[in-house]
Length: 290
Image (cartoon, rainbow, N blue to C red; front, side, top):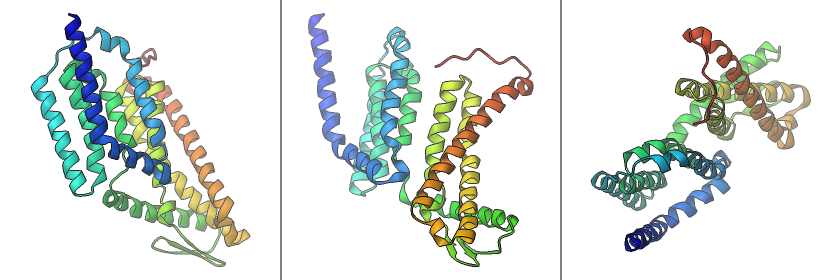
């Protein structure tokens, strides 16, 4: 019995050392992106939160029967390693980072079984939020958001009685011209607010439908709040000059908009939970974390 325990500990140590050697460069580059790219600075909190979610499930994990799925687990790990090789050869960091999450899932399946993987499905899926979107996808999302923010901002500025003309993502005022650049597209607040929406749903409601709704509603909230930021910047620039669209005021407006969007998310969550029993026609269940 003691020999089996020593063998298992040795196997786990060997597995940990192998994983560290294979994914060391992936993790270093990932952390570098979190540090250097403001769009993904929230990545620093994703791993600790995922570990917390796994820790919350410790009783379920300990009580679940261990049924390793050796063949399927090895298949998932092998597929993840192939992604790692392909991503490394193609210099496609997204594939190498997805490979890391896949390798973790495959290892759980290999060592513990499908039941444990199901229990850990949320923490493992949550880790995907730490992975930056591929540049080609990012650009496909950012530019339409720039146009939406520009159009929304133009409409609000016009409603405020300020003469305005828009050409694409450029808003032309009488005294200055504003360009809704990629950094002002709202994708940064969208990514951060989506993460916050998932956390908010997780900690306030145990129903999957409600959690999904709270995550999805962050998308229109982020778009509207960013459009209001563009409009506010345009109105301020009209009355106070182009300095209102630069420096401290520009940075402060970004923080203010995110706080506003967060307040809108909490308000939507409160309203939705209040009307949910009426919509579905049954009492709201007792709140529990899971």
